[in-house]
Amino acid sequence: MATAVEAGCTGPRVLRTDSQFSNAGVIAACRRTAARFSSHLPREPSIKRAVAAIDDTT
Image: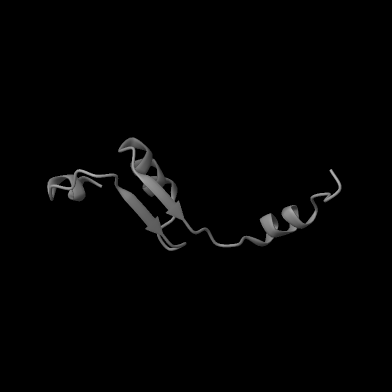
């Protein structure tokens, strides 16, 4: 994010990452600099099971 500012970028900063670069440090840097971000996270088996267990009738 700092490199974009140093290079003279003045518009909104947007970062898009894949699961390799999705971590708390990257997301914290985006939040500190008010950058927008989109991050792909790997599908964890435990999360997949939790989503599948959600009752569709509520």
